[in-house]
Amino acid sequence: MISPTAPRWLVLGALMIAIAVGCSGAATLPNNGPQNAAAVLKRALARPLPKTVQGMSRLEAFVGGQARKADVIVLIERPNRAQFRALTPTMDLVAVLSTDGTRFMSYERGAPKCFVGQACPENMARLVPIALPPKQLVSAVLGRPPLISAASSRLSWDKERSAYLVTRTSADGAWVQQVWIAPTTFRFRASVVRHGNKRVVSIAYGDLDKLGAKAPPGIMRLKVPSKKIDMSLTLREITIDEDIDDAVFSIPCPSGTVAIELPCAATAIVR
Image (cartoon, rainbow, N blue to C red; front, side):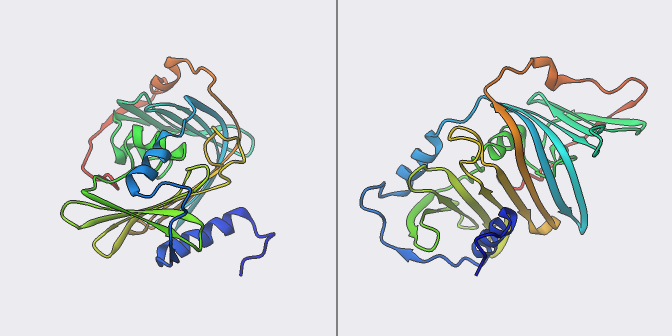
């Protein structure tokens, strides 16, 4: 049993473990709510998202056995603009990744090279290890996980987590996604994508209403087992729906660096 005073990241980790082993207590759907998967997803996708989010966050990640920790300034503008600036404890810039939705730029302080190119998933994962195209990345951080292309969906009630469980299956049956959705607020709580019997990626959200009903979840945790990625992004002090200048997301390489064009490959974690 988890102590009521356990840290939020530990509670969120326990949720991820429960999801990973697939232990859901099936029960009858609530009579006063939607009765099919399409209706539940429609309610969840209809929840308003902020137009912009900007502020401070904390990134903690294990990638290939190596730990990364940093304070990160987050700038996000729907549908597909994002910038992450990693800082030292003294608030000096360490690295930056920025995209205007089409192109990206990534730079580490002191490096002779600056990387640019198309904003494909593998390029977008250079600083924050979330291999998603810009539009899906922005939505995921704001609390709306990517959904696979599905030919069928079914709805059940997860009694243990008091949440709707939508199970989506691709046309060939190879891809399956489970999505947990809160019954009252219709916020996404978690998503797990599997290919065959292998878990491809999982996303869980914590502190769902800490920053406000329209604000994104306070914590996002992502796991990609094949790449040994276990990452959490905790939003701390943010503002929402304040204008961000367009030029912010199209920053050039620093003077004196060599711009290197990076190629793209088909490595998105969801289709």
